[in-house]
Amino acid sequence: MDSSPLFTRAQRVLPGGVTAAARANPALGQPFYVARAEGPFVFAADGRRYVDLCMSNGATLLGHGHPNIVAAVRRAADFGFACGHDGEPQVRLAERLVEQIPAFEQVRFTSSGTEATFYALRVARAATGRTGVLKFEGHFHGFNDALAFSFWPGLGEAGPPDAPHTHAETAGLPPDTAAQVVVAPFNDATVFRRLLDRHGDHLAAVILEPINYDSGAILPDPTFLATVREETARRGIVLIFDEILSGYRTGPSGAQGYLGVTPDLATLGKALGGGVPLSAFGGRRELMDLVAPRGPAVHTGTYNAHLIPILAAHAFLDTISEVRFYERLLGSHERLYCGLRVAFAAAGLPVRVQGVGARFGLYFGLDPERAITTYRDAASIDKVMQHAFCREMDTRGVYVAPAWHHGLCAMHTDELVDQVADLAERSARAVAAYAAPAGG
Ligand SMILES: Cc1ncc(COP(=O)(O)O)c(C=O)c1O
Image 1 (tube, rainbow, N blue to C red):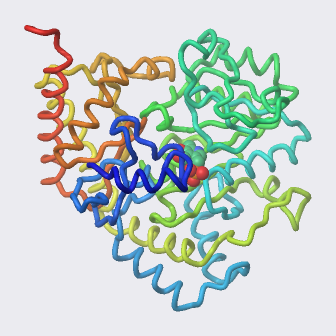
Image 2: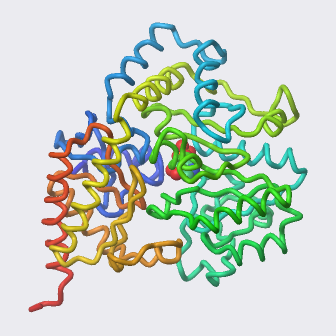
Image 3: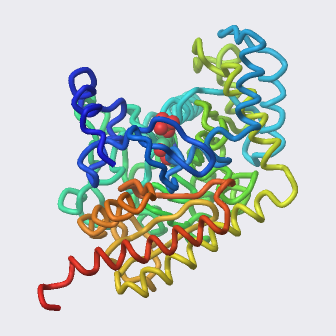
């Protein structure tokens, strides 16, 4: 894709020519500007059609412009969408989520995931009277000040693997914010217990991605997750599952339903809104009772539970409850994972394809057979190879973001999945050819 004229214009009025840092696209050297999208396809600013493996960073799980979502958005327009009021659709959506998500006894809506994790932490602080939070390296929770640490630290600045540094991911944080954040390695129960022994009395919350898609697709070890649940309960620390990304990837009850572990609070987002901005936080009644006006922890906002995303979320939930929805969605992902493994092997490019349900990581330069279980494993990927692959796929009409996670939508057909695998093999061969030493 070449969108240079638009990039030139954009850079005059938008920092870096983008409206979000993650849209910069270092693989292409310019943002991937999109003119329109349809089902499993995005159309670039120059009109070229791409098979989309990004799917709005996971927000459009049904597909771009899915007819059910579009109809819901139109209905909201018919109702005149007065902001700043609640009505039956908001109440009913809360009822549906409370029925579906194990942790939810009560729920509140926000627009972005960044807000949802921020408010979940506020509730945990109100509940415990403590301020500290323990998070895991490689887990992303949005860029709110309280949690903007150790998402993806470079290995040179991350500290020892069993005692990671609290690494600020942005400038502009108040200096005392870092002192509230303890960083732990994922899947290490021994270090987790040690950190709780040392910091537990100050911790309001432990927050984690129950499936760590923001470092590819890393499952928790069941014993580790059980330890996290037991130890937080024993010490009166609020356990928050950040399901902004993991929600709806494995089934309708979130990763918590899939893994059989229920946190005290959880967040949801992305897929829930069907591509329209909607997130949520919720949990046990006695915690949510602390939310104003019932309690002292204020959560409010003009755009909270706006009718457009609320009706879109109803349409999303209706659609995923159709017969065989998950069977088909998970089946097409498994088909892609197999196809990609065969493709990389045939091309002789070392890439680990690791997927859980409807989202997956591509670990370039790593042993295809070796499971990735921690951020430190994931962080040693070969980014030069990753970017080269993204570029090769771009020239063949497939959009692969230089990102940690990728996925299909419900509108990618088996035929399209097979085409993607075939184009991945050709792209991987091209990368392997110019990665090989001259004459080799
Ligand atoms: C696990 C997780 N939490 C929070 C966020 C932040 O959500 P948003 O981008 O809607 O602010 C993301 C976004 O990628 C996420 O993956």
